Image (cartoon, rainbow, N blue to C red; front, side):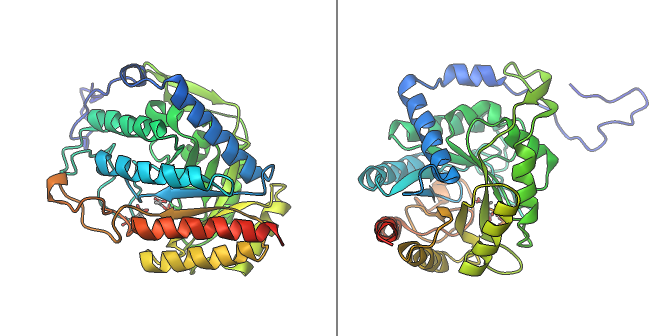
Length: 357
Ligand SMILES: O=C[C@H](O)[C@H](O)COP(=O)(O)O
Ligand SMILES: C=C(OP(=O)(O)O)C(=O)O
């Protein structure tokens, strides 16, 4: 329904408003069963333990495609990753990046929920179902899933299936996203800002730890007043920025000191991609190896690592599925599967090496 008044002062730039099925309808069609809920809970518990330092003996690894555009390829990837996750579980807690909402620097494809057919038709109702279906399929492999949360309404459709969440570099200062994180049921990482400043993310973690009341929707899709308890499991992700990378020992030390000064655990996640790799997937592998060497050398405080990885290396321009290479990213360039497999084994060896220090 539009809100144009008889004097025609409202909605002048709105070109369409379509109804969206309520969250409860989508959850009812695609329910989370007890086995999958167990994977979600266990993933949240293990991630939180690593991020708080209760488990300082393993590394949290957030690995997977920059964005999901093809459910079949995402599941193919999940099956391979699940086998490696089971093999390396004593050293690594592996959570698959299952990202459906892409924040853009200017314009571009905004992810599977927003435009599931990759053709500008923006079939959001289908996108939400597709995304939830992918998450349920990933959970069936035994892997927990991680997402970036971008839209304030979408978590109602998928967040019950997610074990780890991110607030991206474009939004750590956003009140809407801080409020959202305060009500999410899983640990949430705040990325440093696009210019490299960590302060907005630190402030974001502290803001999200508090209680909030804001406007949202309930399970029936009705506009509602939402109150939250606050999220004690928010943490910092260093992703580099316009000022350069920040995965090196000095910026990590300075971020850990800032966390300590803010009364937060001296634990953080390093994103090997984005500003730390200059979006070059070849450089991303080098960053992972540099960080692995430091972990093996006994450096403390690095609780987790993020890697953008898919079946095939590199990237391609988005377009309808039939026109695309199978298993190659349509957003940022990713590391391919064989190298991902090798890097995960190297990270596990680094964790073992660090234990003996
Ligand atoms: O992780 C994904 C991208 O870095 C992010 O969505 C921004 O992409 P863009 O700069 O191509 O818009
Ligand atoms: C968009 C992402 O990263 P950033 O917010 O760091 O650009 C991402 O991780 O997909």
